[in-house]
Length: 226
Image (cartoon, rainbow, N blue to C red):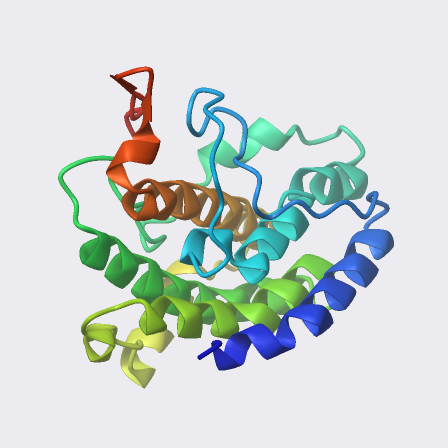
């Protein structure tokens, strides 16, 4: 039986296309293609029911990939993108490790991580209420959480931040300094893209049949996560 979330995919594609046009990006969606460097150029046979092949996941990655351009358009080279490295956010969710981590554990981390981002979006909204990236990520972030839970054996173990935890998360990223608040908001969107992209790579490796990870008897290397 097809996932109920799949019924929204045409709408997801249309909304993403509109948002990318608003960001000045060409509308080219290839959510089933491996991001550069994922599998060392290995050709992959994509199965439509795989979570890693979900168009929703691919479309959010496509939209969040425009964040750097949005940042540079705002600051006009007065602030370099790498300057965001100076603004650390301790509450950002960790990525799934490339090894010694089960698929279930990775799905759990992704689900809870996305719930954390949904809270942090409130900080982004305060600074950039009209951000197209925020609009799309929030709109379909919930759908992606639903897809992730559908693939879990124990979806009930994915917890949502309580009201007190949510308040603490937002207090931790707040600042009386306007510029620092903006940098923090941009850093949230920057790391959201990395989180989603790295998460899809990790899940795809877990979903790939063992024989598909071999090429002429050589297992494709799994790059370390930093």
